[in-house]
Length: 99
Image 1 (tube, rainbow, N blue to C red):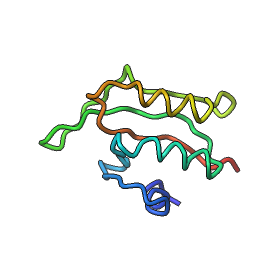
Image 2 (cartoon, rainbow, N blue to C red):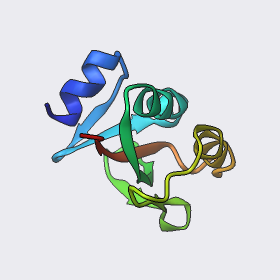
Image 3 (cartoon, rainbow, N blue to C red):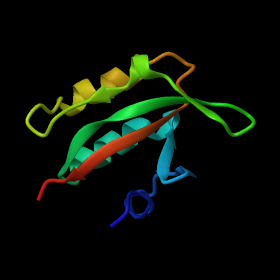
Image 4 (cartoon, rainbow, N blue to C red):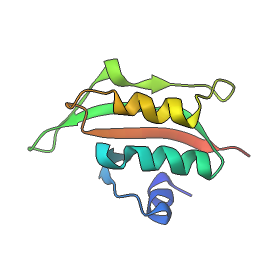
């Protein structure tokens, strides 16, 4: 199942940008809750500013990367998003099935 199909099944709004699903900051905590609640392995996220002309700019200071053996708690993961600056408007999440 593709990430777009997963987000649709979770009723998480997203925008396709190339092959990536960008999720608005306002929906980011819901994505993390779904990742953990559905037994996926959370591998991280990339943060982006998205401009009116449709271009995006990665904000590498506010990206996160985890390994399967080094998962943050759900609270730590959601808290890290809440501390990102307002210029972070969208995220691309990286996760995989646990089995």
